[in-house]
Length: 460
Figure (tube, helix red, strand yellow):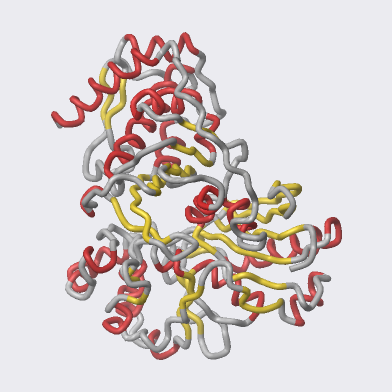
């Protein structure tokens, strides 16, 4: 592929983003964002794909004029799919996975879904299992199945709009959909049960070039008609990819955003427990990756509304010394402590204080450490995303895991990982040795605090 710059379309659950990434060093040189505001319906809460599309086209036009774009790749959140008609329009809006509608048909769906042993996919609430979404959509609109010609996973919805080629990708199919068997690299029995075996688009690898932009897109944006578009990748696996090609296992990656997703590479052999929100993800090379997750970014924002307040060492020490701690779960629908009700031990620190930021950071780190333990973590822990700048989080995580914790410099690893699909995979020798664990002055206090926190959680 030619061209020094790659356009990365990054549709996250909270924000949509378009970035220009320089191929030589995978650095972002230009970024625009817009909120991923959910539209209320009818017929149900759904994503504003038309608004995103205009945002993407405007951004591609501007960035190509300013920088020149040699390729386009896509990364997007999981638990979403588009149902397309024969004329390539949407047969139904793209359902927001946080809508509770699919819960109303849970009993019927549970009778259809394959077991965890086949899919590595835990049974989740709302629309977090893509199969449950599809089942519910077909149930409430009996004519929908007949209108559908193609089912594409969410990154490939954007690929399809750019190229006209229908596809799915293995990382999105492997993201707790119930539709994929990650151990055998094929569809599970569910597409047949849902009646979509002949409609779901063929699975492709994220780095596959699906085609070039359509003539209409080229005219609209000024892009060359031969601009290649890659298949695309699930966002957490985009974060993981840059480490797969630059680090030797064992290690774990913690991707933070709306979701905190822990992924273990080369760790201990463990038996995953679907009741604790552990699962098998599928990486960019099609391999199964033990994973665990919770809605940590959402919890952070609920607990810390308003402007960010950093905690200094004195404020962290005060929280640790007086054992002011938060117990799970703030978002009780997901995570290893699903179903539990949050409560404070000790005085609740006031909103807007450094002490509250410290207590919340410690809480998020302790839940993350529990996720890492569930998936057999060994080696350094690489933290991607916003929590890589959260000092209380990093301090507690390093202490409680007794592992070297390496925060990444970039705001998010998704753009870099998605751009790596275009760059020569594995050719960049950027191996970063794990640094030794720091002797943090708060380490002893953190370990004692974590021990009491764990005991309090077990006692609930």
